[in-house]
Length: 110
Length: 113
Image (tube, rainbow over all chains, first blue to last red; front, side, top):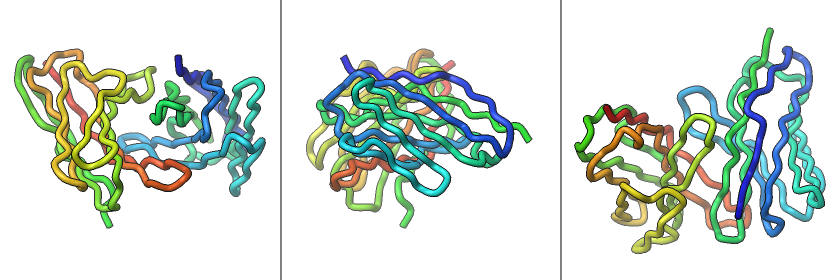
């Protein structure tokens, strides 16, 4: 079945790079997404990548997609305290639904 | 342009009580969704509506009903609340574009005692 897996927690120092990893099972996924959830708020789309791409860069964010290994990563350069949040990986499955991972809590220490 | 709005923001119920969570979007989106978020489990789809007049079950529909009142509004009803339904509930709507981006409301935090 469709499944998306993420590690639950990542802690980094301010100014370092953060890398959040995700694996998925549906090889027919067309789009893969990264959402950010700040405390007490809903989810906000950060970025997405189409399945025929290997990489997408958007300012401090870099998304890498390895289709062979079904592995997706989000790199945040120069991580700031304002980046502290829960980050969700999601895939658009062939059943026409968005499948979410469990979320990775990113803690940024000053 | 308010995006996706949800009411109420917080609610406490006793076991067996009923309530309706309201959701509205002003982006003219066809598709709307209800999710629940539980610690360590991500978001799980309860019900969705691909267009006005249609609704379908998601991953965890038991104990819930939905109504797509019109294109803007999609409500979620708990007929007889149970402690297992304590959760944060999110409504979302989706663009019809190629990227299938979903826009989320701020959530309703529900506690069932």
